[in-house]
Length: 466
Image (cartoon, rainbow, N blue to C red; front, side, top):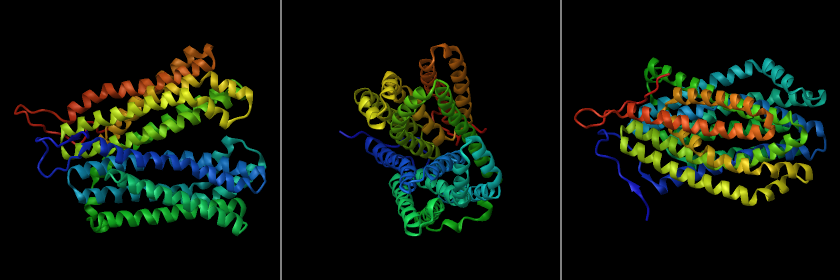
């Protein structure tokens, strides 16, 4: 029988707390899971289109450029996360004007950052390709790709803002449709430009640029219809100093958190490489297995993000805690299922990805560690969504930095164990993230929903101001 939670009587008048039910969690989580799973297809499609030209250096150029763009764009993921949390809170408060203003602020920030990336394209390319240290042929072709695709930066970041606004309103089905449209557009345009117009690597870049432009235009059309009078917000509301300051604090904290997380996994890869090519290849295959699991858990984090943010905005403690419990339940159920599936079918997955017998043996030896990642990391994924929705970003940032310090310290202590010590350190890192966030959750939820002497709940928008 479906479990549905009705908003508590303590919700403020005029508030709009979410309906908390198993069905709503599924409606929010599953489309985002599919959206996340389509994203890697973008890189696979680009590689497949260029790979059929039969020139290895062009394929290397696409791979090298993708690493640079993944880093500079992913580091701006705060535009999606912060916008989603603030939009969900404005939705919960029933403040449609603030929802519009939140999106407009994010779009302005995204356009400024995107323009800055274009202006700084020369040093970005110099640093990026210098760090990769690829062959001259790969670097030259990669720069041709980079010099075209960098012009997609304002549109890509505008897409982040639009996605955040759509997710914050709980329309993950529309977010999925837009993501699929961008990915399919990219594939079709790549084929047309690379093969139809014989533009080679430059055609691939132009196809991706055009897909980002079409995605941004489509997303803006969707939010224009969703909000109706999107640009009717007074300038004074959009450029409110207090709101802008809060947005920058939130975005700053998420940026630091994202960068620390990126460093943690880059460190894992780098240390694996020190063990030799076989260890590196085996770890890389298992990381792909972990990535698949992350797609599912990220979907439930998104559900927590939207429902908890809306509850905070509606000033409804009961719906907030019910949202945390229900999304956590499903996150752990899926995490357990993914861990069992990895143990049962991981060897098939490994055999599919590599024919090298030594790499297969290496990956199977450490399969158990990779299988534990979803279960050990479930709490971290869940509370990431809760903290983003509640905009407790300062504590999310601090707990990430604390966990990173524990990760690096544990690696030094376990270094004599080789690759086993590396995997144990990663598991400890994930566990520390979840446990530290759970520890802060108790304190922050009490601060966000203080109980007055009369027994009524007098919430505040966020217990963490940065």
